Every structure is written in structure tokens, then in C-alpha cells.
Length: 214
Image (tube, rainbow, N blue to C red; front, side, top):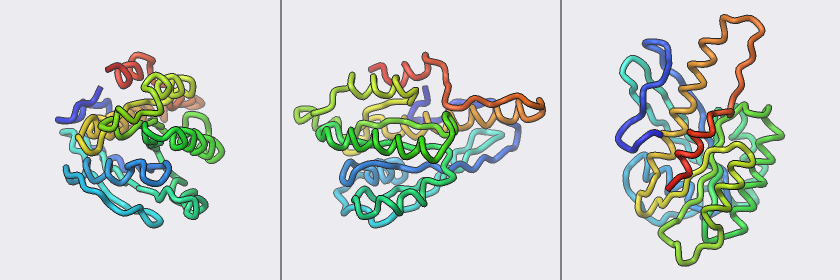
């Protein structure tokens, strides 16, 4: 599993730069923007809800290869729901974020997954379910096991985080980036083989288990 200090080497073509789009989806106030700002700027502060969408870029250098993540942080308010569909089109990866202290936000994350399934072919995008705000564990309404079991049932990556405490924030983005690079390498290797399909979002169970096991 990727660690906060860096990203493991992936099987990519030497000198190749990959550009991938990552979109964050979830209810308002689950901490999507806080996660991005913690990852990008290594700080945390209370912020107002996102209006429409916020855009960030992050370049990860991997020696002979690099990955540029285009991160789209969407608004969670219901009035922006239809607009968010425009932002996640063309995405290569998605974070479905919920607040572990709000059961309704967990259900909303599941609804967003259904929306993704309407837009993309099965396995076309890397999807991670993220339970945020573990610092509020005493108020927890969604257990770790609930999140893990749902993720496993849908073949999603899964982690719990705390943007406030900087718990597993880098690991979330780095793990998704690692998966994207792995698939990019697989696509490159298979593109020369006529008729061979590339199966996406079908990573080994052991990798998913590493994300979940704590």
C-alpha cells in the first residue's frame, strides 16, 4: 500500500507523464474540501461549503515517470447535484466521501456510486469509499465494518480518514494514484495485443485488504 512519504514505483513506460482526473463526491460537510486541502497544503481549517466545484492539481514524480492528478472537489448541496454530473464526466477515479457520524451521508455515498455506474462501464474508473472524521469516533453512526463490507460488495477500495488529525489522508490519494498508474501500465502493455480487453477496478483482494486492515 502507498505510504504518506511517497508512492511506490509502478510499471509504467520510462519518461511517461500520465494525466488523470479524480473527482470527490459526497454530501455537504462530510469533509471533501478538508481532505483535499490537507493533502495539498498540509493544513486544516473550518471552511464554508464548496460552491459548484473547486479544482486542484498535484504532480507526483516517480523517477522516470510522473502522474498529474486533476482533483475536482464537488459541492455536496442538493441544489448542485445536477451540476456535479458535468464535473465527474471523463473521470478516471472517484472518492466517495461520507461522515462516519452521519448515517445519511453513508447512504448518499452509495447513491453517488449508483450515479457513477450509470455514467461509466463497470470497472472503468478507480473508486474508493472514504469514511471521514474518525476524530469524532464517540459520535460514530457508521461502523468500520459497515463501510468495509459495502466496499467489498462493490469491489471498491476503502479507507477511513481524519482530515483534522491528518490520519490516512495522503494514503487515500496515493493509493488511488498507485492504482491509476498500475492500470495505465496494464493498458500500455495490452494495447499492442489486438482484441485483448483491459479489466479495470479488479485489483487483487489482498490490495483491498491492505487498505482496509487497521
